[in-house]
Image 1 (tube, helix red, strand yellow):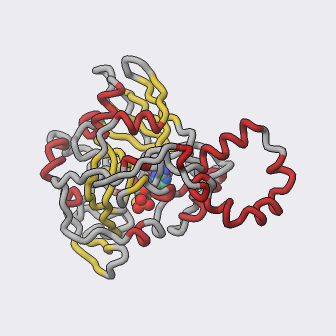
Image 2: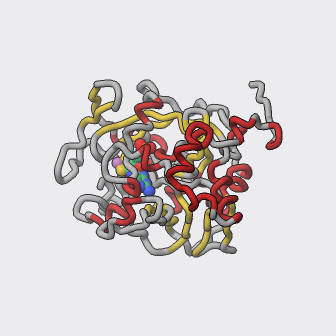
Image 3: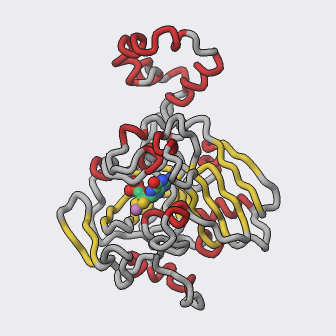
Length: 321
Ligand SMILES: Nc1nc2c(c(=O)[nH]1)N[C@H]1C(S)=C(S)[C@@H](COP(=O)(O)O)O[C@H]1N2
Ligand SMILES: [Mo]
């Protein structure tokens, strides 16, 4: 594919200035008035940086890894980005607009805990270090609906490699940003913020575990968990944590957000199993969002060939919730 790369100074004015400012500069000035004018130069710069076009845009579309195939059509992008769970921005499915408040740059990833050396790395440096590829994955929410998405990103195993965990580390605990000033859901103190998820190191280094930086051939959208979210397609959707800021390596099993909220219904493993109902509903079938269709749900969401071995000898664990 032929890609034209523009240097910063070659960007046409209309792209260099964020669209909503071009279209709505007057309304914005009226609304913010003197406050906007009195922004300190540093704050104004931070504001502009976060509104610039994505600095990794040139990496997309990434070439597709044909190994991962679907048994259903890809979900229409518009549907995928208008029906989302992202509790930081509200508990309904219509959070795309609220999620626009998320500021994607600067964005720093912290890697710490039981590692050779703790490190912090800017998201753009991290992404450019990694081999990006596209994978078609199914996604099965615990609420019994599903989608199929062309994600772009890199294997979580590559980040584990970069982190150099000590042999005593058994789990990786991941954390979403915490900023109630932009995420109204995080003002609701009865939720256990920040959102946390975890995997064993064996799960995290399984080739299916994927860190998403893009979707539909471009940088991943805010509502889908930009700039970095997890995709673990053999587990219920809540394990696929969005907008990650921290990877902490530990020997303690992480307590996830949903487990902290409702441990009777949600646990650590959360592998998809159509034969084990959720306490309040059946998991036997799923609605394919946007297709008006229900299908039987598959064990490990159809990914058993890749992951079933991870759970041998763990039959006494609560593997399916
Ligand atoms: N930080 C964070 N991550 C999250 C959630 C959330 O509310 N906050 N919801 C989870 C759930 S329940 C699902 S089904 C998926 C939804 O991802 P999607 O909106 O890209 O379909 O994100 C998961 N990751
Ligand atoms: Mo979900």
